[in-house]
Every structure is written in C-alpha cells, then in structure tokens.
Image (cartoon, rainbow, N blue to C red):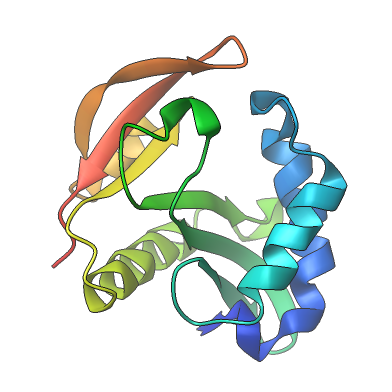
Length: 154
C-alpha cells in the first residue's frame, strides 16, 4: 500500500468527491457534489495546502485525507489549518490504513510549517485521541454535534 499525493493520480478526484460528499455532505449547507469535485480537482494540481493524500494498492484507491485551510465556514475562526475528509473504503477498514493516512498528513503539515492542525469529528474522537490529538471543545455543524481536536505537527 502506498500513500501518494492526489496530484500523482488526479483521475481519482471524481471518485473521492462522490465518497466524501456521500459521507459528510449532510454536515454542510452549500457543499454540493459539484463543489466537492471542484475542490478535489484543485487539490489534484498541488502538493501544498490545500492538498489531498490518497492510499493506493496498485491502481486501486483505498482512501484519502486532505490538508486544508478551512474545513467548515462555521469553524473558520477556530483554526488556521485542518485535517479533513479522512476516508477509508469499508472493505479496507481495520487494517491500519486510517492511522497511516492520519500520520502521513500530520507529517505533511509539519513539512508545510503548520503550527497547529485542527480537525472535527462527529464520532471518532477516541481514534484521534489515540494518535495524540487533543480535545478542544465541541461545536455543531448543520445541527450535528462534532468534537474539535488539535495537534502540534512535529
């Protein structure tokens, strides 16, 4: 399994957009499938913020995670860089892929000189806490309670 920049395999942007929108679209008011696709097509042009890492087994896409400046307009005053859209296909879950993607993204954030990295999660706070993320309160996105967490990339 390899972790690569989406910029190396830009043809997967449409698939990722469908996965991400199906999973998290309910948390955003104006985040349509078209907007998600545009964002990922933009990420596929760069290896710096905003960008996306993908997990691949050969030519098979298994998951992704993004490094963005803003993950939700409601939280724009909360942090200045965000880990977003950590996703692993259901058949590849439980094999450490999410851990690897999260760690690779934190390392990328350190390389990009991000001083403090944020995330929000409706349900996976214990997973992130095991990886060193610290709880920083809660918020609501489109009526859904989410945990806010941060980490200092090193």
